[in-house]
Image (cartoon, rainbow, N blue to C red; front, side, top):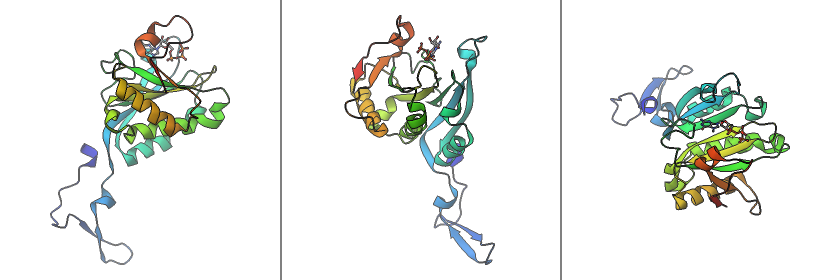
Amino acid sequence: MATAEPEPISNPSNSEEEKSEATGQEVVLSPEDYIKHPLQNKWALWFFKNDKSKTWQANLRLISKFDTVEDFWALYNHIQLSSNLMSGCDYSLFKDGIEPMWEDEQNKRGGRWLITLSKQQRRQDLDRFWLETLLCLVGEAFDDHSEDVCGAVVNIRTKGDKIAIWTTDYENKEAVTHIGSVYKERLGVPAKVIIGYQSHADTATKSGSTTKNKFVV
Ligand code: MGP
């Protein structure tokens, strides 16, 4: 990963020497002190703003990409909280190379674990659920099944906000159910509250207001 690559160091102890400004004495820096902490994947954050004069795809904008812990926090701290966005807006965080849309090759056979929030939950839960979702992604929280994760989306909507984790293949039952149960636990959703997984194919072709669940946890 380019940003995490250390400069070549001639020092055999793999540490760097630097003069302390205060004392003028040499201080030894270990790589921990000057290398940003690499993430397993590179991620891209996208923003959607509902402008009805444009197509859905034209309303989607890439904000920026990061692949270190430090750059994740720099970006997170720089942008608005989800609860401050206007209704109709989305944030999406996807692995670099996957576009946050059903049509992407990595999404078209996939689906999403959907968390639907009540209007009151915008104040109570939205921002902390979204941050926890981001941490599940960048921290690869789903063990080997993290490979199936494509990204996550938060939709800010007057009728009730939504947060979802998108995975690559709804037929990968083991991966999908593992991701769902870990995600539910990480959010602290009570056991009696059921969350559902729907395929994008069903969501994209739904006729009524609900899409049938392929899995629940
Ligand atoms: P939405 O933004 O996911 O949910 O989809 P919203 O606004 O709560 O609406 P609801 O239908 O779920 O109640 C709204 C609309 O945006 C969809 O009906 C599509 O027209 C369009 N849209 C959403 N997504 C995620 C995609 C996508 O991946 N590809 C394309 N082409 N259109 C999409």
